[in-house]
Length: 123
Image (cartoon, rainbow, N blue to C red; front, side, top):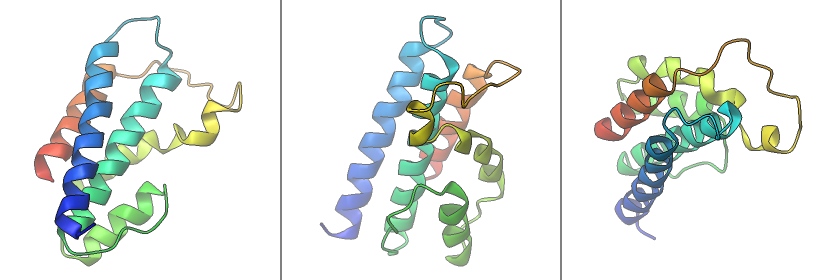
């Protein structure tokens, strides 16, 4: 799939995760670990779309730090996106390891959704 089409596909998938975040909102029926996972997924897909738009093949990685560094190497201004690294803990493996996520404070779901939307808007 050419880079621009792959980027569009990634953006559509990132928006689906963002839609899930909006749907979950502050509903306590959805654990923070589930909400955080979709935040992380939206961010990862957005960063990969951004790389594709820069003409860079996406590495097969889930490492947000690596994706941000690759964008920096392309000259992208990602300074405002480094705080999104806090969602790295909500990776796939946490969905299978009960008790791995023991956050002391609940997620700021509104802020997380805003961060994802801002990242998408930049891409």
